[in-house]
Amino acid sequence: MSKQWPFFWAGITFGIAQVIYMIGLWVSKVQAGKTPTLKPITVTTDLGKMFRGLEVSFYNLFNLPDFELYGKAIDGIASTGGAFIPGVGWPIVGMMIGGWLVTRAEKESRIWAHYPARVLFVSFLGGVLFSYGTRLAGGCTLNHLLGGIPLLNIHSFVTAGMMAIGGAGAFWVMSRTGIAPFFKHQETLSYAKGNDSGEAATYKAGYNGTRRPIFWLALLFSVAMFGVAVYGGLFNPESLQHLKKGELVSFSKSIDAKGWFYVVTTLLAGIVGGFGMAKSGFGTECSLVAMEVAQPMTNNDSKFAKMGVPRITRTLMRGYLPLIGIVASWVVMLGFIVFVWALFDVGPAFSGALKYQTTVGNLIGGLLLGSGAVMLIGCEIRSYMRIGMGYLNTWVGFMGFALGYLPFTLFYDAHKAFLKSTLLIETYKWYEYISPNSIVGQKIILGLWWLALVGLLIFLVRLGARNTGATTGSLLHKNTEDLEIDLETSGKKQGGRIGDVTVPQPVPGAAVPAE
Image (cartoon, rainbow, N blue to C red; front, side, top):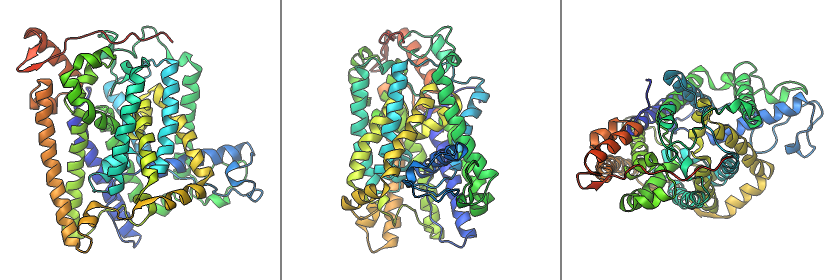
């Protein structure tokens, strides 16, 4: 519990979190007399509700007009306005708590990590692009990569393809602006402090983040957003329409509406998932980057070393470690869904709405998601646990999230009309497209897809071991820092080679300009 985990076990942990979440929704729908479906974790709509809650609370505390209502609010009564009503996303809260718990277990927050002003600005801009991209694409990278791809959602495959393009473009641009040394899946003080500048871009002797005004501004924003949401969800469960000027926001979708089982299970799912992510740096966008650059890095590692990409990042990319974690989570989650659908006839969700169909929004939104995630140095779900871990760049990027939602909620009807008018594919899932008239056929297709993912996981582990020179056991069971140290040590002892694989020797990273 005091050390980081490998990506494989982080993926298994997140898959378990998905199962806990789906059980929570399943039981709560049955209790409410509704037809249950198996829906993996989604967070972006909940995040919009949390941002809206903070927004309305601010207006009411300071007796300000609600600009989303265009002057249509009745005096003394708050209306919902825009695309979102105030609410709380318990998985989001849980992921933040999970990240914080890791800092307690490891006895190390990440407040020590220093990010220059230019990196913080890029993170803020990345948050804006990513947040707006979620609205156009009908969900974030969590929705599409960790839920949509294993469920064979057509719009998720399209979005993921565009994310890969956007991420590669942002990676290329940022690597040529001196930011490449900050491309790290996770920071630990012991690794950074004992390494050269190429591995320790965020380590700065004597740095004290609390002396920076941006530290307190970003921290205040995160505390206020989570604080208002939890307060409204736990202690003030009345209708928003009853809110008077000068009062904090209250939420209509509270514990009274959802029930304690829903709250506890979805919060627990967030904590488990956030803990696993924080224990490894597990995320989504880096898996797409790994898929694109693993072989080029294996064939010409020195090129990426000259760009300033840290050695540990090059190792995890060559080893497909982020993608191994993602596929491991797919295998756990989809195995549960296939089992339940076959035995209990409770099927997958993500149908019945325009946001789950394929539109031009998936093309544009995918590009924004991919580029924004790279600029954030982490996708949205990583952001929640990184907030709990104390990463300043994520706190700043989170403020950009709030700004990125505004165009969508201010011009909600126009965005809905745009998405509806640019519908490209109506069918929701590939198995519906292949077998439209047979539920049994659809179940068989999804089962075969699960077997294919198991095979993909085995293939990636073997390929990653070959690319890095590590054993498959080390790749699966050693965290990236221990794996990197072992490879470097073995490489030096064997003249730079392990088997038939050249192990790149430590090279200084790109110089990190002073702030």
